[in-house]
Structure formats: C-alpha cells, structure tokens
Amino acid sequence: MKVLVVGGGGREHALVWKIAKSPLVKEVIAAPGNAGIAGQARCEPISADDLNALVEFSVNEAVDLVVVGPEAPLVSGLADRLTKKGIRVFGPSAAAAKLEGSKAFAKDFMQRHNIPTASYMVHDALDAALYDVEHRRRACVVKADGLAAGKGVFLCRNSYEARDVLRGMMEERQFGAAGQKVIIEDWLEGEEVSVLAICDGERFVTLIPAQDHKAAYEGDTGPNTGGMGAYAPAPLITPEIEHHIVQGVIKPTLQGMAQDGTPFRGILYAGLMFCDDKPYVLEYNVRFGDPECQPMMAMMDEDIVPLLVAAADGKLEQPAVKWLPGAALCVVLACEGYPGPYEKGMRIEGLDAAEAKSDVVVFHAGTKLDSSRLVTSGGRVLGVTARGSTLVDAARLAYGAANEIHWKGMRMRRDIGHRAL
Ligand code: AMP
Ligand code: GLY
Image (cartoon, rainbow, N blue to C red; front, top):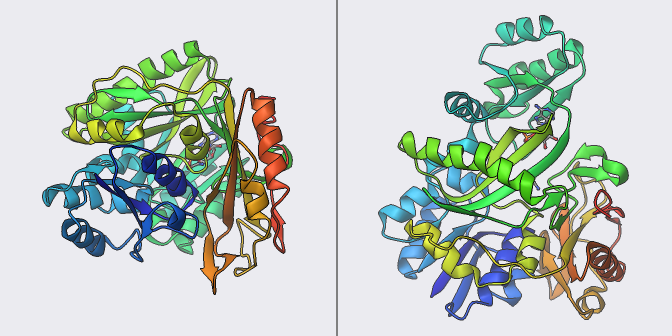
C-alpha cells in the first residue's frame, strides 16, 4: 500500500513512524512532513491546507490511504473531496468535523443528544454577550466558536475579565471570523481527562488513555500551549471510569452523529472534566492529540494500518486494540518564548546521542534542514519519547535522552507525568 500522511508536526511523525512499520505498506509519503519525517517517508512540499494540491497528488500517485493529522483540512472538507475521487481516507467528513470546527455546533449537538456538558449560551452580538456575563454570578469560560489553534478559550473569574475577552473577540476581532460567534459556559472544576476512539461511523475501539500537559511551565502554570508533554497509560482513567465515559459520551456521540446523518469516521477525541463522578464534555477534537499521539504510538502493540483501513471503510470489527506493557512518556522540547513569539533557525545539537539510547525515539515537529544542518523551525521542536517498564522508568529514559539535546533557548518542562508519578 501507498499511504499519505497529511501534516508535519510531532503527531504526524509518530503516525509515519508507526505506519512505516506495517508489512502492508510499501511507501509512506508525508505532506509536507518535516526533517525527521524525511527519514521514514518521502516528503512532498504540499501544505496541509492546500486541499486542491493534496487531492490532485493523491489521485496522480494512486494513494491507497490518506491519514489526515490536523483538524483544519478536515474542517475544510479534505475527506469529502478525497472520497469523491475514490481515495480512501482516515478522517471525518466536513459535516462530522464540525464537532471540532464549531464549538456552538458541538454544544447544540450535545444538548440535543443528552450528552453531559457545561450549561452555556451562544452569542453573535456583543451587546447580548456583555449582558449575559453581567447577569451571571459565577465564574465562566468564554470560547471563540471557530478554530483558533487552541488559543480561543478563556477562563474568566468574574464579569470584568469576561467583558475584556468578549471585546477582544467580537470587537477587536482577535481571532478573525472564528470569534464572531462566542460560547459562554459555566466554569467546571474537577479532574481533566481525555478519551480517544477510532471510529468507523458506527463502531469504535478506544485507545490507551493518555494525558497531556497543556501549561507552558512546571506545576501546570503559565499560558496554555498545544501540549508540553504527554504519557500513556494515564492511571487516572481506570477501566471503570473509561466504561463510564464510553457509555455516557462516546456511544451517544457516535449514535447522535449517525442519527443526524453525519456518521463520524476517524479519531473522536473527547476532552472531559470529571465533576461529582460524572464526565462532562469540554470539547471534541476530530484527530489525534499532539503530543498524546506520540506515547500512544510507542505503546501500540499491533499494526495500525488495518485499523485505519477498517475504520475508513466502515468495517471496524475488532473489539479492542493491543498495547505493550509498561508506559511511554513524551517530553516536548520547545523554543524560548513559545507559545508566544520565538526565534527560528537555531542549530540543534546532540540528537544522535539522544537517539542512540535504547527505548527512545525522538519525534520531530518544528525542524528543518538548513544546508544539511538541523535547525529549529517552529515553537515545539522535538518530542523525546521513551517506553519503560513503568511510568517512572519511561520518565527517566525520556529525560535522560532529552538532556543530550540542546540549542540556544531550548526549553522543556521537567515535570511531565508528575500527576501520575
Ligand atoms: P477546550 O479547547 O474547549 O478544551 O478548552 C481548553 C482548555 O480550557 C481545556 O483543556 C480546559 O482546561 C479548559 N476549559 C474549557 N472549558 C472549560 C470549562 N467549562 N470549565 C473549566 N475549564 C474549561
Ligand atoms: N494536546 C492537545 C491537543 O492536541 O488538542
């Protein structure tokens, strides 16, 4: 088989690494990929947002399976366009990807299908939104409706904070069109967990529970990022809790999407808050988490390709996925300044020493080759991932390897996994 992976981050490197191991696969291609992915796949300089070029390329190359990493092309309809051309794709249709593409759509969907979520209001006029927060006694969360690269969510302790956020979104258009509609919802307190499932429109298999660390600094402080590290399995999600989430969230979501005529195929990622022993959905994502995907791929004890093909074809029959024993942990190495502005083009050193360590794999995110030297080209640069017999062991191995790597301004969180260690 010829498989095309769309995207060029750490998540896509982990997918390419796993897919390339499949005996069913002759060639892996990545668009656009990155300097690390280039070691395992042919990289084509096509942006993940260039739908026309991706479709044309897939047809010309007679690709057997397209695996879409990021959400934006899915929300724009990449899966629909590939399907129309007879190309098999792992990822939801645009109609199903609205679960992530529009938070207002997701909230209305949950309300209609009795899926627990924080109570909310949707506004597209600033006056009404301001009136709503004035009359709300409790702390609230203000969210931009559309895609905002994970930056469109604000926890507001009082109405003053909420008003500022609303003005920024709706008046100053901080998030462009994505913030013209907003959701104001109750601030839920509890334990945050996520559950991911591979879905075929009707059936599903859950993936190993993983936990990411979104905050930039140690102790879960500082601004939210895409994720500074992750580990799997996450002991917080016991089999009982997972059962609860499957029954209360995953099943009704898939049933609801099928009933509404927009069956969900691909990765359903439910971000949840556990309050009073009940899971409330904070958000849906329609793709693997980044960096959660990195430890997940390190732990998967079977060929991923038949799973992706079965889900894409609507024929997912196996009841569960096999996982290796032990645990895996990924530490993200980022640039100073991230998630704010940062410098690019820093020379990366020590990668060979890190990769020489056993049970360690370094997934690339923002890297590129500059006259055959590896340099930084993004905020999150590398994801040093290790598997060990326990989570403590995995953390020791991952940090041991991460300590070999350096560049000017390199930064990492030193406490990934701390909640579970
Ligand atoms: P979202 O993109 O909607 O998941 O929001 C990003 C982050 O904001 C989540 O991972 C939570 O940490 C936090 N968050 C979102 N909604 C709520 C809520 N209703 N109550 C408390 N925290 C929330
Ligand atoms: N790590 C969180 C996400 O991918 O959305």
